[in-house]
Length: 168
Image: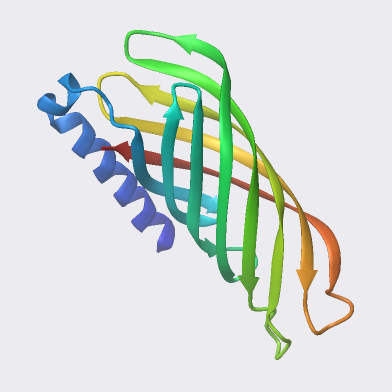
């Protein structure tokens, strides 16, 4: 059910971007807003500070942990892997921070996680429409706070997903 809604939203965003020839002639804006599907499934935003540096983040549901996740990354786009008339394919890397609050279930106390994340990804940056499509993964070193001693302490986690953003 959720997957079909997400696919429908992504398709609508792509159609919106390709349907407007006036937008295709304008330069793409620096701020993008869209959807990230995976872990987490979230609303995603990206703000370009320069051509090769940006701040990106997301707010949404942690699917595996049944909670709310917020993260932000400072991204560098140091490598252009492909350039064509229709898109540019840069790779990106960057440090960030994740905050996660989740329900441990079975009557256990909720848990709070915070820690740095290291993100890597690929970006399909379309030239003729104000859209980008991306895939990314992030490794997280986190501190887990909980009233349960077995759940408290330092651990590692991973996020991975794909998304689309429309630029204004």
